[in-house]
Length: 449
Image (cartoon, rainbow, N blue to C red; front, side, top):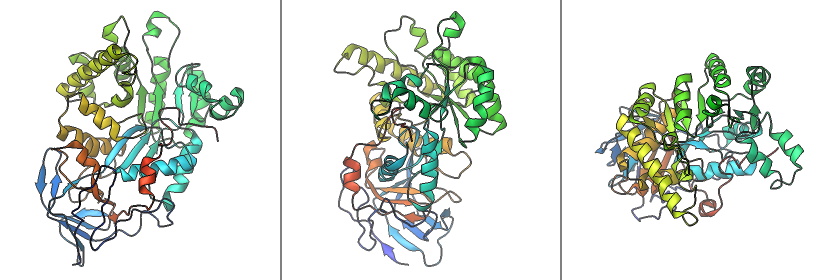
């Protein structure tokens, strides 16, 4: 068997995919014409420490036909990974960067450089999903599920964001909103409204349904609504179940979480973190509510990296620390309850979310690593054999320079990346890709097409 040894020279965080002595690792160029499902190799990786969800254990990994196998294939290429560490690829469960055009494709390349092979785009214009789905079969990029337009109420989030964006894209307000309604967002104030928009929404082939349940206590007090009516959301969930679609809900208060649980939401986008509220119970999860989330198996993306910037530390240090305290307390009760917290940044770069969660000193490095590489991939693609390094799993993995349990940022110091049995090559412009501004960010990534 041909033997390959990864270069032993240490790398900086973004100087990833070191060159092997007998195997060129020059990451696939952005617009390659090679189909990503082709060219899987027979490979045996020896000498590495392999992550099992809790610790690293030394064992060999065998790959054939894009899957991890029990035994080595005849004529398999050998990679000597002595002193290296192997983890499954990372995943990002709340992004908006795949917003269409060159920005999506640049983001795809950047995600792979960071070892992110799976993503959930939690609100996008329909055109963005169409473009990426058309581009993806002939190009190398992460596997992405698209929510397409989120379902909300009149003048509720994210509609106001789009009203603020029309000048950025050089379009009159009326034209800009017309281009985005029934594409980047849908309005359903009543079940009758839902009857109208639901067929249009389904026609876009969404892979998850994104909804906006904001401060739902306003429906109890008859205040001006800030999000979907709970009665409309109930009907959305019923219809989504008929289509075998999961439902995610943007939430902002503990009452939103209670309502989401009562209605059967599968996935919570965000955790309460706002400051300045007189009603502190609206922000802090009780142990009982955390236990309900755990028992329901609801996925939770805290989006900590976005939350801790509201307010900004330099502008309001007291408010900033108060926000972090709420996040820390909420994550602690979720951890103690065993709730299904996964990684989702709602930001530019997925790894910022892992770093933000680590800064709160709630989860161990091993727990955060498991979230990023095992729990989150399985949440995005529950039907696929990913997020594991056992026989029968898809042969996608990252070979690291150092142990990420000792230093979590070692999970970004990637020596070799393998996707479904193919060794990925580093593009010649990799440093330029990593230094460039990521496309999109938050809900601001959507644009008319």
